Image (cartoon, rainbow, N blue to C red; front, side, top):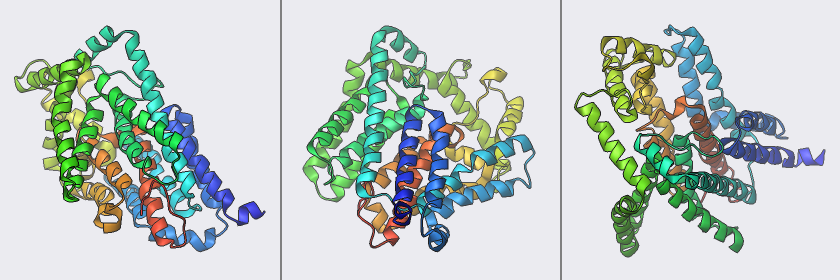
Amino acid sequence: MQYYLSGRLSQQLLWLACAAGVAGLLASRALVALAPVVGALAALANPNLRRDWPQYFRNGAAMRAAALVVFLLVSGFYTNEWAAWRHELFRSLTWLGVPLAFALAVPLRGRQRLAVGALFVLGTAAVGLATLGQYWLDPAAANEAIGFGQNMQGITGIFHIPFGVMLAMSVFWALLLRREALVGPVLRGALGVAMAAMVITLHILAYRTGLLVLYVGLLAFVVRLLLQKHWLWGCALLLALAVGPWLAYQTLESVRQRANATVWDVGQFAEGHDINEYSLARRLAAAETALVIIRQHWLLGVAPADAHAAMMTQYDWKDYGLAPANRVDVHNQYLDTLLGGGVVGLALLLALLGWPLARRQTRQNPYLVFFLLSQATVMLIDDILSLQISLNLFVFGYGFLVVAGENLRKQKDAMFSIPISH
């Protein structure tokens, strides 16, 4: 009974939910599905739940996530795809459940948050190294596949786009975690090795999206150093940013194959050639197709559940020579949101990404800044919220960093947290 009344039961359940969420992202969809359930139990186990219940509605981050669900409900009044709408509504429940758990459960202690952060970083590095080992079993065949625009999935079956993003984010979080006072020398060394391993993995496997996130994050770090007048370190890192990609291109066959395939891919679209076998070219065709629809339904969109059907209908008018099986949806989260939700839907998404940075205190939290920057970057080239693992990654990070962080700022007596820096 005391275990419950002290709040430790709620805290331990939230910790377990976080660990299950991280393990699920890396290896098991079943654990991803289980984590929100455990999180809900953590909220229910809060001994002060009746007193704390209103704080969920006072948590701006949680309310902005809930607004996406409300908008989807409203879109039911003008959707034509009821089966797809019901499916999307079911998927969207994660926007309610995960923030609710982080808003109402007893907050994690510093060491618990450190454990979650270290599990994410070291787990991602371990999967990356295992995948790299698989690459070295037959590098010639892997490089040939890369030349045709194919990507090696994570060894546990993680799709290459979210996996590349996880690798890039973990590089920065490893760097930041190493500076925390609670980190001992052994863990600090392990984080350093993991950081180097993930940078190498990203380059050898030539994950285009992951490398984009990595270099955008490094550029942001350069800007931060220069604004803080660390001129020597800032200029040195800027030089490394210029030399690094060139050096990777000169030394790694996989990077050369990826770069050459990307240029060739874009060229096929620009010159009006057959693009049925070219991934990036098909994405460019999809973007043009989506823009036609967006101009006609700019305010509320065609409804999120109707986006795919609207794209297929528009392809019937202009198909770019694509076979029906190769007519893809738009791979840009901002365009996809405009397509389904119009300006109103896009405003909700931008509020989700940008509002936390409106507070000076939040902007000083590098963990949160790098998370939002990485997600905003990858949204330029992929509709990440349409893929379940990417949605789970975003919502988990948003709950762990943004929702929980907002709660912790309001609880003056709470212990300092990791990786929420104050």
